[in-house]
Amino acid sequence: MLQTKICGIVHPDDARMASEYGANAIGLVFYGPSKRNLSDYGLARDIAMAAQPFTQVVALFVNEPQVNIERILSQVPINLIQFHGNEDNAFCSQFDRPFIKAVRMRPDVDIDDAALQFFNAKALLLDAYQKGVPGGTGATFSWDRIPKKCAKPLILAGGLTPNNIAQAVNETPVDAIDVSGGVELDGQAMRKDPNKVKRFITNAHQAYNLRQHA
Image 1 (cartoon, rainbow, N blue to C red):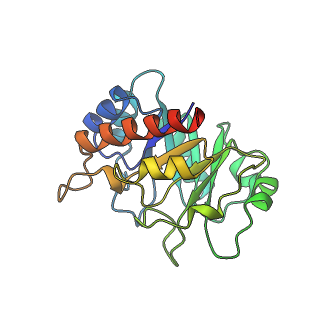
Image 2: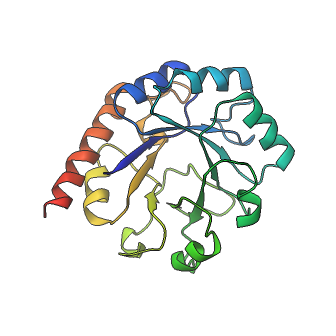
C-alpha cells in the first residue's frame, strides 16, 4: 500500500487535519535555516500529540549535532527520523529510532550504492538537488532516474502537488510519497491547505490502485 507523508507541519490543527485525511506520517522540521523550522519544542510536542495514534511522527534533521537531536527526542514524541544532511549510517543509527535517509538527486548519484551505504535505513527518500539547499526546494527531478528495483523502499519527494502526484505515482515504482510546500495555503505562513491535502492523498491512492491493476 502506498504511504503518504505531509511534511513541514507548523500547527497542531494541520497535524490533526492531515492525519484525519489519511496521511500515514507527518513531518516536523528541526533545521534552523528552514522557514518551517520548529524552534519551540513545546509547540513541536503539541503538533506531534495532535496526530492520530497510528500516524507516524517524523523528525527532520540536517547535520544536527548529536546532543541537539537527543534533546529533541527527549521532549517530543518522535517515531521516525529523517536525515537530510551528510550524516553517515553509523551516526543515523545511534538514536534508538528507525530512520530514513534523504538522497539528493545529483547528476552522478547512485541510488543502489546509497542503499548499500545506509544499510540500516528503513527507506531512501529521493529529493530534487539544488546546490546549497538540503530539501524543500519545490523542484522536481527526472523520475525516469528512479530504478525499477532497489534494495531499500523508495520515497518520492520534490515538487509534488495534487496536480502532478497521479503522474508521479503512475510513472515511478516508489513505495511512499512526501509533500510539503505543494499542499500549503497561498500566502499563509506555511499552513497546510485542507483541500490540497485531501486532493493530494486521494489522487495518490487512486493512481496507485490503477498502477497495481495495470
